[in-house]
Length: 498
Image (cartoon, rainbow, N blue to C red; front, side, top):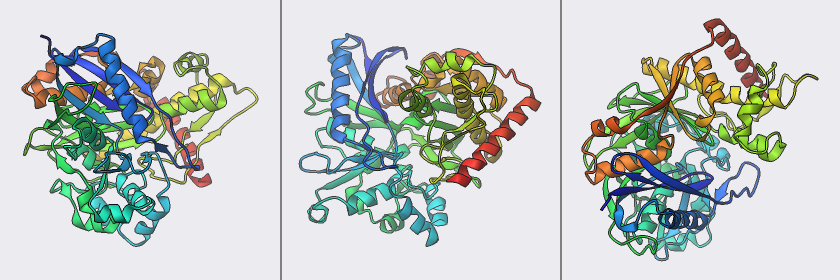
């Protein structure tokens, strides 16, 4: 009987269930979207039951499509949208409210209050993160302050808090396991990077009771077994968990210090492996945990920078402006003009992420003339996606004191050849796109496979990783510098209007 790994890739707009064979080939995947909820400007929520329903629907679909048989599944790996936070009832397993999504800015005032009180430096020293509404701690605080009947449930010990990975693990194990892996825990602003455990001072600062939080566990190990899930046999080990961006770094086989990847998703997320060294950024990058392999195994750290809006800018052009009918249409439209014609689009539609960290910045399109058309706006959008990443990567190389040889790319927008050529040109580095572009899925599968011994080491995984195409630099250094300076001017204007 064939042995396969089932991956649950729970993302911001949908859930993908994928099947990987023991030789590292992807048999296929299915995706089911779920609604986005916007109660107020700047607020973003998800219904946890909709997330769970999309997960079950995807599992049923992969079996129905013949991508695998239930009895072939030897392990399950989970990767997830990070920082998104929720509470649920330990007795019923039901969510107590909608989850607050990583993009949500509702806790900006609370974070600003902590900044004014002088807490940011201590938080950064312990967690490697900035004090920003992006991360989970302030979201947990808001939920605990705004959930009906929470005081009684807390007193009775009935409240479970967690990120999406811990919620899925709870549901898949029939409520037997409340845990989160170190990579997800490192995104909460509550984990001490030195001890890899919840920090008591931070728990007190944010008002999050320790007994509500999950146990912190490795990214690759048998963490629990399926129980009571109608779509799956009981007893399948859940053996790998990582936040989506750390999973993509692992799925890109970036196992050596200096290896880096960029995921073009809803946002763009760039991680560089720094090995066992926990680097401290002085310029707005984040220190995060990449993964931990096995109980008591060494922790691999990474530097991270990300833009909140990347592929979501293309969706905005499609859904709100109607410039394109489908997201892939942007490549042909952008290629219909030689350049952006002086048009700049800074997609600060949810504030600015690294290295600016300005939640009040707002998106802006400028440089328009009577000759500007749809093609110029489309080209400016792809330019922006590439230029904001180049800003982060230049800073990352400087702070890590490492010059990457090439950048590995993935995510839905990595299918856009024009975008990848622009990224190579504006970064001044070669890009490599992998054969398996679903690298978050690959990372979850690789971690789970290691957890059950399907692969013995990262060296075995590196042997099954394969490149699809390389994109070499085709822009002169002088033109690159001029384009970068124009972009910096536009970003500065965006921040002023915020």
